[in-house]
Length: 344
Image 1: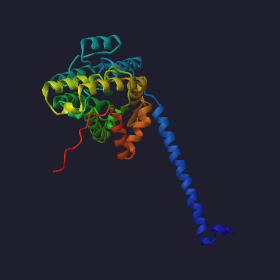
Image 2 (image 1 turned 135 degrees about the vertical axis):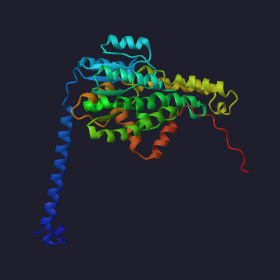
Image 3 (image 1 turned 90 degrees about the horizontal axis):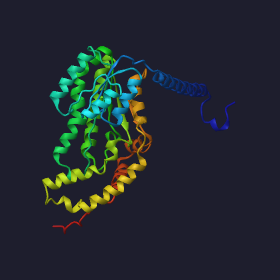
Image 4 (image 1 turned 135 degrees about the horizontal axis):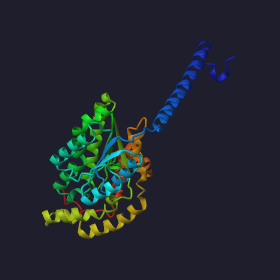
């Protein structure tokens, strides 16, 4: 007998309702099983002993930690460094080679790629684009040369190096790992050159992933939130370098009425203290990079750090109007805003 609340539904439809409900539950179970299987495959670790991996930006920070973690797994690491001291430290940590070069120099980068091809015998397992430069400052006082410098290292260098090493990666069905940032999914005020370079890197990674899938080459993107590294610890003080360069180029510019040197001092002092409180241990990022190189099934994207998984994820997927309010509130103290003149 059909209950009263179903009295308006024809009795002939009742078996179909039961079957539909059972099918929905079956689909949910299949989805959960598929996700569990995917997670288990991702946990399986490949032995990378003896395999060649190139890592850029190994002078300090993430790069130094990545070298140590890969050497501990008996990988043969080529650690690209900017300074002789950084190269010496990488070799001491166990890197097989540590070329010293400026990634913004296309000719030096191409030459280093040829040396890698010779060293690895034409078979490369991993390429980690970790190197990066940040030149923070608000748009009013950002010299155009700073945009070009940041793009050269953070975007054009990964593009060129990947292109030069693709033949080696194809032969090994290897891995490409691009260290982006939470700034690559949520652009923040006061850091436009860096954010633009990371957004460009994200777009490049999306295209590259689809193109290289025919050769079973995986492409993973790492999005760290603020970590305790030399780059992040000096971030707000680096605003002063940008401000001073614009003051040299445009000493009488109107921009100084909004962003005065007194404002700059207050901005640096206030925000540097806050950064120290939120910065996390970079081991979380290093662990994600190693997973992308060693997992049986690496993830397409790694949100590294608590803030990446919470605050920045919410800003990424939430309404843009909410994100705008949050970003505006981040600019403390705010710039001086003169009242508009009379309407003409």
